[in-house]
Length: 225
Ligand code: 6GU
Image (tube, rainbow, N blue to C red; front, side, top):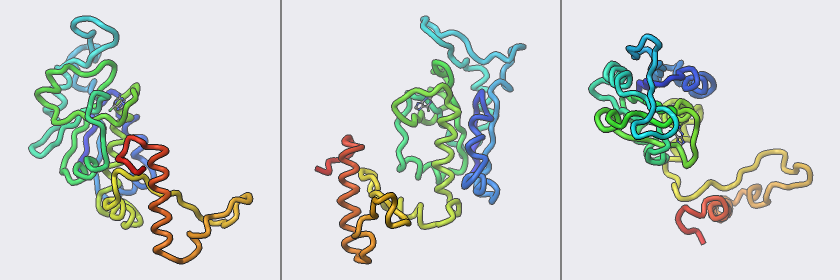
């Protein structure tokens, strides 16, 4: 897979992808990730890429010229062009899984108030948000999307089971609590059932705890009452 990230802050987007599991996946050649600075496509002598919003209001808007030139230079025949924006569709694991089988992603990062909408209409395939809160910088959101996609590439995870098992799990149910040694930590014991060796009982216990946790932390997910 190839991923290009177009942003005013390539180093912010790439920093979280330069260590640990993701760096290992990059080193193994599973993915080629590159950052590009939008300012490199500015025709302005001060490398300007933004201007004030038409109709008034606060903040600045990324101008269409540099974005158009950059996207046209970076996109190929098979490219999926994604805009990171809090106005996008909320990212879900199912979509991450679909994106992980694309050949080429071009991730465009919004900044300030957003990007000129003529670019959204003509060159962007989909707008993606990583959640209902506002970040200063779409490059942070781009790094998160990349991490989620790259860990699903075959061979990225050390224990290849992790991604497989997860892909069969219920998207409307959180995972059960987990424990490890020591069995007694500061007087708090690991639940006996997990030490019982009774796999049917363990499975039932995990289901019950998963539903309990989902009710508490994600009442918006389907009803586990
Ligand atoms: Cl994709 N960008 C920014 N700037 N803020 C966000 C976001 C994206 N998703 C949620 N908040």
